[in-house]
Image (cartoon, rainbow, N blue to C red):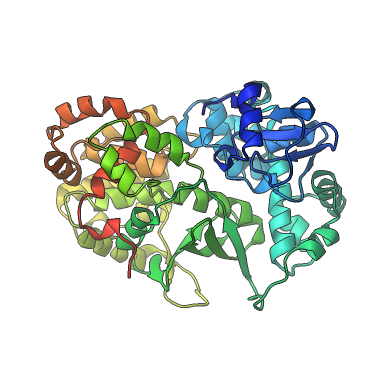
Length: 493
């Protein structure tokens, strides 16, 4: 699979005729006779090839006058893996749009974050996705509105506001245009709930491409959970979220074909952002077939992939938080890193109320940590300098770890900080920046796994050997880590 696949007509037709779910999100099928667009795996009888046209995004289909299929709900497809594996302008723009930047700051705000003119942004998005930033954001607002209509008893006026619409009329017109149903009709067609609705809690399903192995994904998040901010409870990973308009608490539960997501938000306008960040943390838009096929080509990795395919890279909902935690974890155990982070949270984190108990704080922001007296930080002087320098750079904006950042440039900035070696910079690149090719040849667990598997164990030799795994070396790290019995590799009992 590759960018621009929607232009390969023969390949798209084969995917539609075989109802291949692996291609959901890569392209969309618009049917000329019905004026409806579908995902490739739509369960209805495929249309005649002559009646099919293909588009790179749901927004492009909507721009062309097609309505979303009521059977396959193409608006709920997993996102394109392209925006996670690439670091070019279009990919960075799409990550920001998913994070709600256009709704909050407009197209000028999007362009400003990327360092380009609005005209350049418009031109590149139109060329690759068939829709500009406003149309892409509008499609996302429509999907957020649908989630709220179908999963909550909220009044339609509240839903329009929460989804980012500026007026009720615009909300009504958009829903009718995209789904060919009024908001009230959408609600009446939604499946009836078998259990009562919990006030203030939004329940939804996060789709992904199969396979997905939850063991290392949720095992890593649970094993490194910071008390007060994160916890594993009753089969779910729960954590607090710092969001643009307020805060939230999310519970994420793995299921065979989706992730159950339960959100409590202090401001419903944060729904789109919360969903986007949870999907990013769980790496749900990955293409596991493409990743595993490449790694399986290596005879050393092939048995690891065949044993437990579909490993994802556990990422983060807050890049600055992860960077701070990475420094706290330098040369100490997982337990010690959690202890250091918990002290910071208790002393400087913002308190929140958890209706279910257990979670008490948001992780402190860089601005809050910048005001901390370094002498109060219980750690060696050199690591204290590393931590405070990082915090100062994050707080004053000299280093920005946001979705719009250039991976190579940010990594170089991190390596220039005192106390930052390749391991710290690369683990931040892998889990905070989302670079799918970040590699950790100096990591002790990786070197131990390499020795046991007969791979070179010195960093230089292992890096050379790993060239064949590119651009998926971050996923190779997950398979190598999984050879160990560390708790990060297992779902908690």
